[in-house]
Image 1: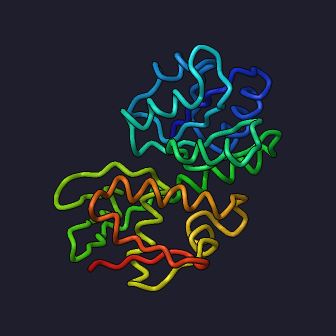
Image 2: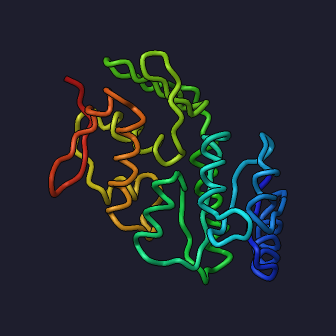
Amino acid sequence: MKILIVEDDEDIRTLIRYHLSAAGFEIDEAADGEKAVEKLDGSLSLVVLDLMLPRLSGLEVLSAIRKDHPSLPVIVTSALTEENDILTALERGADDYVTKPFSPKILVARVRSVLRRTERNDGEQVATDGGIILDKGRRECFVSGTPVSLTATEFDILRSLIEADGRVMRRTELIEKIKGDDYPVTERSVDVQIASLRKKLGSMGKGIITVWGIGYRYAEE
C-alpha cells in the first residue's frame, strides 16, 4: 500500500516516513500543496495531509482530492487544535484528524484503522426500499442507480445507520463503531458528517432522522 505524506516540515516528514515505512507501507512525499496535487493518482491508498502548507493550503489539497479521488482516505495532521479547525477539515472530507504534536505510533495505528475500514471486501450489499444501495466490497454508494461519492467515514456512518434497522444510534456509539472507542473527536463532528451525508443523498437524505438529545436513526417513509 502506498501512502502520500504531505508535510512542509522536513523533520516531521522524515519522522512520519520512518515509522510508516517500518510498518510496511510504500511512501511518496510532497513538501507543498501544488506538488501534492501533482502526485495524486490511482496508486495511492491513503494521504497524510498537513493543513498549513506553502503554495496550496491543506484544505485546497483536500478539496482537490475529494473532487478527483473522492474515495481516497485522508488523515489530516495539524497544529491547529481548535474545534472549528477540526470540524472544517472533517466537513471538507477528511477521514481523521490528528493534532500535533502526536505520537508516531498513534499515527500508524490511525492509518491502519482507516485502511481496515476502506479495505473491507466482504462482497455484500446493503439496500433500502427507497433505492439506496451500498456495495460493501467496492465501498460504493448508489441512489436510484446514480453513484454518490462518499468519504470513507460517511460511507461507514450510513452503513451503520441502515444496518441498525431503525434503531437509534447514539453519537458516541457511531464513533466507537466506526473509529474505535479511543478516537478523540467531539460528538459535534458526527453532526458535521451527517449534514454532509444528507446533502449528498438529496431527497433520500431525509431518511436520516435526528433523535434530539440522543443521536440518529435511518427510516424511510
